[in-house]
Every structure is written in structure tokens, then in C-alpha cells.
Image 1 (cartoon, one colour):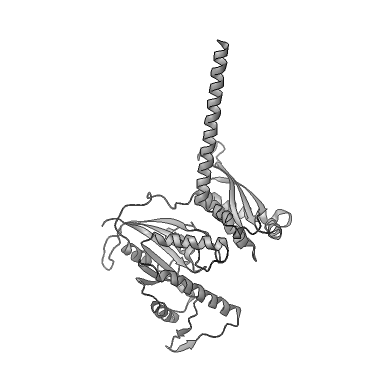
Image 2: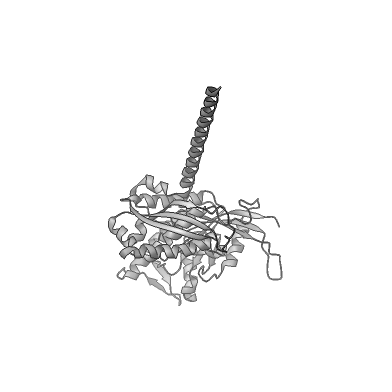
Length: 379
């Protein structure tokens, strides 16, 4: 069988389980995951290499393939510059793709009319409780995401996630509801958390991929630089350890990232050290106080928790220095939000390195000219 390759974008409302699915398919953690909505702010590419599975009795087999999975921010109506940037990431992910996974959280959907297990129709009740409000909001978000999907000209697989939390009798009515709204290439029920239904999902994905060449080397997991992944791990701990509006008003900027000269163990048998300094940006002094905590307790807790994960990611010891700074209403600042993009950060780093090289060359040239002048004067 020829190699099949392609890009598959994962889209859906916030908290549908997109990042959990990406990590489950890759077999390791790449995207940060929390229970809070809008955890993912940029698209994340994970490279999945699948070996040939030969045909056998009852098994049609599967072609050797490389699938580039693109996790995206949750689809929502943008209000701030940060929201607009996140939605731009979604649109960019949908521009260059061979197929799309439209992920739906089956525990959040509340259709206007949904069949019961007995085939009877029940009307949606008025929103009165917090749970009903959340389901109504999820329905609006799902509908908004579906409008994006309907405009696509590529195969779209409907992925019904979190089926482990749903009675089996409720699954068929949900499938009927969603398939009445759009013509999907496939409908696959899964549990990303428990890794149920993933092999069938991969089989369907590979079947949709065209034959071609690899986009990435076999052993490459992502196109994201390590410093971006480090910033995300720090932000994950902020999301998990702080409450109220603080997590959504924070961003993480890597100020210093010094890799060890060698990855070999030191003479004392210890791993080499990566030195990292990161700024946690918030919008108000009150948020800064929460992030620092009493006598620095919260900042220490964030740093300790993040450092463990970062060491696992980098394979080195990590010296992590965290500090907090206030940038008022940064989410409304287009320039600041764009500067958070890791691609732009890489461009800025490359530009700085080029300037540093140019200055070094100029200094060396001036020093050589001065030396020649001194030689001429001596003669």
C-alpha cells in the first residue's frame, strides 16, 4: 500500500475535548488540558505516524500513513482581540486541511426536540437552573461551530465525544439529531478520555487521506518549539490553580531560555540544567496579588507544579524563575495579542540574532581596521 498523508483539523465548541482527543491519538501529552473553557488559544499540530496494518480475516487492514492533527481553540463568538486571534487560528486551520473532525460533547447537547429512549418527543424546558443555562449556552456554541463546518468543501467526520458519560439509549437520538443538520462523511462515537473508539476513528481518517509524501520526519511530534510548550505548561498550572477571572486574564511570555551546552549527564551523574525565566502577564494589580499569593505561596506552587512537567518534556533539570507583571487590558490590545503568537516570537528571535551577528561583525571589522591602523603607524 502507498503512504497516505494529510492534515486533519479538529474543531468544536470550547471544552468539547479536542485537546484530550489530540493527546489520546498521539499517545502522549502535547496540548494542555483543563476543565475550563478556552484553554487552547492557538492551533497545535501533532504528527501521528501510523504503521501498515496488513489485511486479515475480518480486518480490512490500514495503509501506512502520516496524519498531521491540528488542534484548534474552541469555536466561539469573539469579543476581545484575544478572542479574534483565537478564531483566526481556527479559520487558518480550516484553510489547509484534507478532512475535519467536528467534535461534539454529547453530555452538553440539549436539542429543542429530542427523542427519549421510548421514541417519544420531549420539548426543551425553559432555562431556569445553572445546569440548564450551561446546556443552552453549549447548544448555541455547537450551532455556531456547525455553521463553520457547513461551509467546508472537504469530508467532515462527526465525532460524538464522552459517550462513557451517556446512557446508550440516548446515543441513537443524538446521532439522528446531528445527521439531520448536515451530511457527514462518517459518524464515530468515542470517549477520548477512556480511549474508546479511537482505532475506528483512525481507520476512517486514513481512508480519507490522499497518497503522498511525509510532511514531517518520522520521529517529529510537533512543529511547536519547546519554549512555546513550556509557556503552555506554565499557563496550564495557572488555569488549574487559580479561579474566577484570573486564568483568562493571564498570558505567559518566555523572557529567557538557556539550553544546556550538552545533554550528557554531568560528572556527578545529574542531568544538565535548562534555565528559564517566564513572565506571567495579567491585567490588574488585584490579579497580580492573587497570582503571587501570601508571601509568594501561589507563585511558588505554580512554579513547582510546572517545573515537574517541564523537566519531563525537556529531559533535563529545570531552573524556573517566574515573575508577574501587569499589562492593563492586554486582551484588547491587538499588538500585544499578536506578539504572543509563537510564530511571531520566533521571527523576532531570528531578527534579534541577525542584529546581534551584524553588530558583532561590525565590531570585529572596526577592531581589525584599528589594528591595521596601529600597524601602519608603527611602520
